[in-house]
Length: 174
Length: 174
Image 1 (cartoon, rainbow over the protein chains, first blue to last red):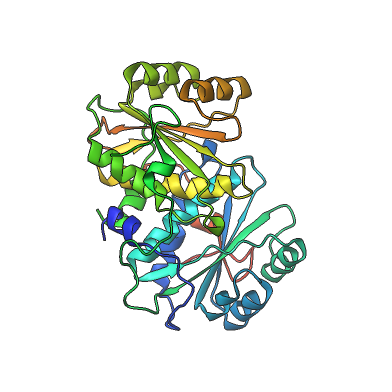
Image 2: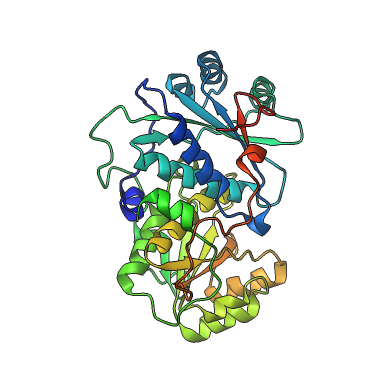
């Protein structure tokens, strides 16, 4: 799948087939994260691959923003060092992972774990050290609906609202 | 180009051919940003497209972290609302833009504008309102060196160092 096609068709996916994700695909997802660029090349990320049924089930219970994690065959938690650009760097890494997943017929949905007690409980469950920041648990799985991936099903501001030519306030109309 | 190929071959690019970037390619880059997912779908971003020679030259002078902006035919500044996830969301958007650029034979390099006075001067130059955060000015251009894009030229931690199985500290060795 061309990069541009992936970008145009990608949708956020919260329902997954139960089919397991093969090792070689997990490897591709991890490489997409690992090889991502980061500020000053600090690579402030850790990826925890979860495929154990019971752990997945617990993650779905604990992450109130993403109970659908419990229905995924794979979850990858991202924890970062506390660097100034960690959120931005992790955003770049997870977006590479999401696009690779999309190309594989899979999907994901960003689940933030912002509530402090919840975040700590999940850190404990996954053995994540105190000094790291648990940013997200990303569920991954094959897309349940075959008709996913058509262009234009997303609710977005128009290009004129967010793109400007030469100076802010001069709307892009190209 | 397949998504996975783009992820595996992408490099950070600081030298560009002087060739202008066609309107339709600028459009693709902006769409890659606009269609990116964001936390609560807030879409906290603005993209300012700069192709004016004099403005590009000034950006290269002002952004001390990225003087090479001055040698690019195109720069896109990203300014965000001040939301909790703006850096992460912008990271996702700019990574989609970078991968689309790579597929087009182009490249970019994240340039942060963290020094306060510098940031303000560039905001003024581009007419960016006070309430927005200027996160980066991304130079874009066609890659100068034909041999760019080979696998393995990047300095990265190993997968074992950043990937874990089931629990943090159980290194991924797949």
